Amino acid sequence: MTQNNKELDEWCNKLYKEELKYYDKVKKIRKIAPQVKDYTKKKTKKIDNSLQELLVCHEEASEIVQNKIKIATRSLEITNQIIKKVVTQDLSRELPLLENKTNPPPLCGKVKSKKNYIVPSGVLVAAYTQTEISTNNWILCHVKLYSQEKQEYTLVDFFVENNRGPTYYKVPKRDVVPLPNTLSANHIKSTEFSSGSKVLAIYPETTTFYPAKVLKSPKDRSTSTYQTHYYLLKFDGDTIPKHDIYARWIIPSNPNNH
Image (cartoon, rainbow, N blue to C red; front, side, top):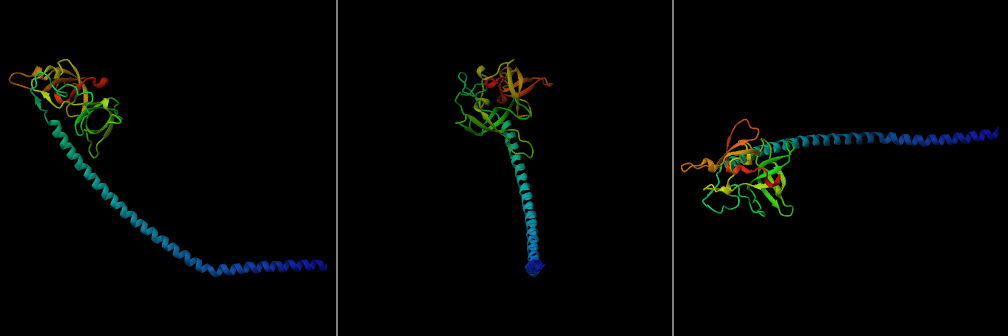
């Protein structure tokens, strides 16, 4: 019995000591609780202030971005207007006429360019392109630059849609056909496609080359008192029976074996 009482006393003393420890911890927690609450409140306030500042910055940044977009859109509109003006002027420009009667130079009418000829930047060409809409397009482009290493042109589509920037193409040299830069004043046979020939020509009010048949060459249409460098063409599948097309906008029907 005495032994049991002793064990019970020891157990009670141990329990009491543990209670004191926990009591001390509780006192400490109660003591620092207000400080923690105050600290948390301050931190919460700082976070709220930071969030508010972030919201203000976000609104200011959004306004700046919107202004930049407006400026960029307006700049694009102005650029497109300038491009369209240049396009219109260039499309309507007539080529120089050469009086040479025997040996027309390269790119006089249908005379091909030299094999190693590189089209300079800014010059118009016919380019074979593949797009989402069509995989067999010959379109009007102008040259931006040429890579000798890759044997490749960087071209800019001559057609510019509203509110969109220029479209660029990477095109192998073999898929680019230089357009005439002069015409024969005397209608030398080697410079013109004869009647009945199959050609590719820009359809009126477009910048795309379509298959066509020559009804009359410029020579066939010219007289001693009237000279023209327009072909009379019939486009394949066209309901309009004939079109006058300037010689500058006509290339062979199968250029570079396409």
